[in-house]
Image (cartoon, rainbow, N blue to C red; front, side):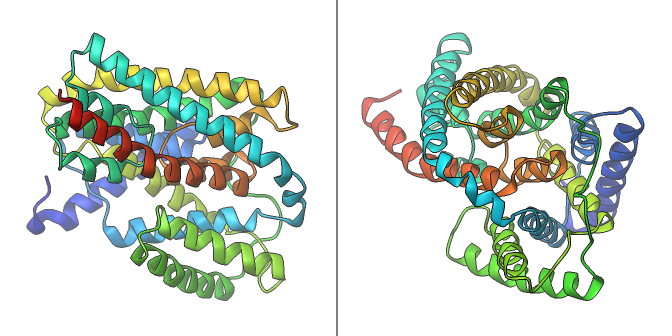
Length: 346
């Protein structure tokens, strides 16, 4: 891991790697290149043993900018489809439970993991919360961290390619229409950051992202602010998000990576297949586009899926609402199941 003495150089290397990955992914025609390119490039360096780190201030600003980008896409027309969301929430809850159960069984039987490690590795989301729970158990924290990070990385890469195969243009970045002026953008960023920090103090998941989205949604619907977040601000935020996803593997022993990567991809495959099944079932009964439901149901990181919604043109409020709902489910479900596991033994 980076030490305080070399942290500025590590940050510079990290951001340079992310930027290079974004440019290369764009030139190669990758879907959502600003997100997938940095994630892949930084992962490769981390696996090779190079320590990477994104400064916290950049991470926080990135979350707020992505939240603001989502808020600018919320229009009055969005609420016309909101009456279909309760059924969608139900399908999402069912898919979360299926992923949770199937992943645990797979890791127990094929990877011979102990019950607590398998359980915590299989939780489809809420990474920081799950790692916090891991410290109170006998689970293998290193394996849990790698498996969960692999899920986030793999879904960040898989979902854009899946949406691209459905015939959607996934190489475009940003939203059409007018752009926010510099002063309204700066003021909005500052006030949205304040709201996000308040939500963070209240222990609300994805607080900075939600702070940006809440402020942007209210000001745009009221007419106080008009226009989308300009590309010069949005694209670096997406790239930093991808860079953070890849840098999760920094400092992890190569032996641990090798052992846990296979389990991580197995969990990802289960999650993606279950997501597709429930998304396809849902669109049979409600009038919603499959790519949008896929992004909303895919159990990747909240912030990365939110960024993907903006990049791929999905309804941002729909995607955000579903990922927050997933976190709410897991907040109560994981400790409940873990408590039973502690009582029943390994």
